[in-house]
Image 1 (cartoon, rainbow, N blue to C red):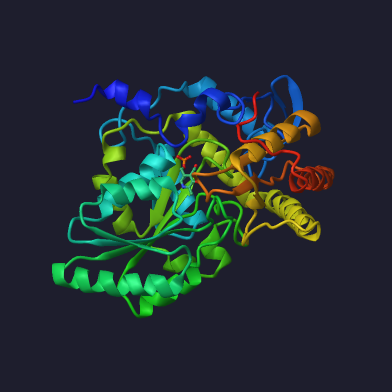
Image 2: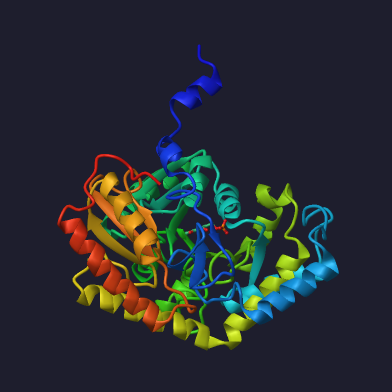
Length: 414
Ligand SMILES: Cc1ncc(COP(=O)(O)O)c(C=O)c1O
């Protein structure tokens, strides 16, 4: 028999195994100062492309004013308790109605964290006789929701509609035998690749198969669609999304989330989602702040327009310079390079220390060995000069990467 702590010390996990060398630099870096395109990293100014503050709201003076006023008036404690018992307020309910209107649904339920809410909603919606069919590139909160499911689940290859059909055939057979139902889950915008979920094609399958569709639109809300109502709006199928999930952690630049849909479904979640029934409700300043953010998203389309000016310029410029940006068709911009872990860390070090450019790197085991992804998050706070500088810098480091200048068997010392 083992001691539990001996076990975890011997195997710190796929990401934890590099903690000693990377902590504070490649992992858990501290970006300091006002949230903006330029921030401070280890005492030096950097141009950052790492924050999902898509619309630049996090530091908008009007937002700061409202957040400040709400915190002063309510404090962070109010309301105390879970919504069902003692933590409900008229403003929580008002926000739910406003969010539902925004994403063109009958009602919505607030979640105090997106991750936990997404998991818990999946858990509440299905029982052991039901079958889940989900996209293979799904976010961890979907995967964890699926893990809670006590019945059968089938994963389909990322955005592969033929494969989804195959899994729906299997799911239909099983659900029919068990008198269960089918839940299909996808993201609206996949946060790593930047691919849109193929919502239109998935919705089309409803003619052939009986299922309900859950869309995690964490990266799509505020950024996609004519009014910012998300990926369903962009693809003209918002009405066919049965369970719409949006978070406040990205475009809204805050904390919290919501699920919207038909009144009956939302009522069911209110009375069955364990993460909300048994946890404290969103503090009032977050509710007041979310209402203000929503109002700005609705009335200031120029924020979304500016995000797209930057995203389009960045992506066009990178492609023109010969970079592989994968299959993104959203603002999320991966730059795919080849190299090992040593090269990835040396290149990142060069970018940060010598060029003042901060972006996130993704390496094995998150992606296949030998691949490096530099993930750029354009926002409304960036400028076209930032785009130009970044592309020129990328060209320089790419030349060095190809010339083998970053080669090393070890993670760069920081
Ligand atoms: C696709 C996706 N879903 C859900 C979440 C979780 O949302 P939250 O940060 O509100 O917990 C995230 C990350 O924030 C995400 O990227």
